[in-house]
Amino acid sequence: MKKQLHIFFTALMFYTRIPCPKNIDHNPDYLNKASRYFPLIGWIVGGICFFVYYLSSIFFTPEIALILSMIAGILTTGAFHEDGFADVCDGFGGGWTKDKILLIMKDSAIGAYGAIGLVLLFLLKFQALYSLIHTSEIVNQQSTICNLLFFVSAHSVSRLAAISIVFTHQYSREDASSKSKPIAQNFTWKEVVGALFFGLLPLVILSFFQWQLLLALVPVFIARFFLARFFQKWIDGYTGDCLGATQQVCEVIFYLSIIGIWKFI
Image (cartoon, rainbow, N blue to C red; front, side, top):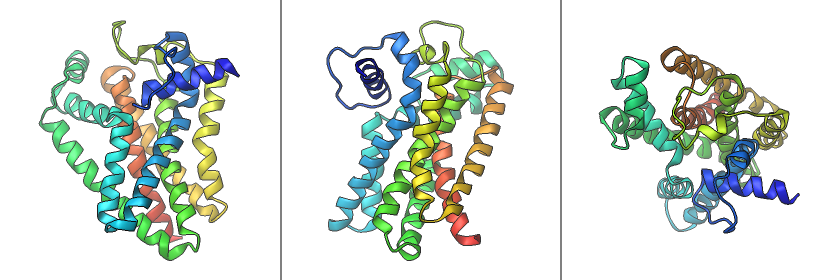
């Protein structure tokens, strides 16, 4: 149990800005095993986003509450995944070879593709969340519980989609200086089972209210498949930025999928 707590706190320290015990560091062995808890981190981030939204909605309009919720999520993770998304937009938008794409993604400066991508991502995420919450209040009698599960499920499922690329593809960079490389060294069945359990459990609980919501997994993992194939085509694998971009894209697709399910089923 002590070892598992150490691995969990390693994941918490790596993927968020939440303070951790002083004895936790970036030990490569623990960091590699921490992938099993990546979707569990989604529970924490999603829960924080929901409670900020819920508390803010008491004092402000739903629109303001959602923006504050999105800010809370970004502060919690240190824009870890959003930064990856922007780097991917810049790298694949401005590079035409593997070396050039990887070089651009490693640059800390944001370019036009990254800036435009983030603006459109945030606009789409905001509108999707607003529509989802509004519809949830109409469809569900227990909308507060459902909304909490929507937030948590979106963050856990999208992180499962992202980390699953580690289980099926090779890491692209050859240099040992990359912060994300220890995650890609190796994995066991424990990492796979842990990621699946923590990634799917919130959505399974949510499906008790409406089983059709499980269908949201289909478009999410279709998107994951095509993103992974796109990365493989251009850079022969993935990088940490690719995982961050996958998480962001799949999170938005999850929201849109739930809205589509309510509209057509």
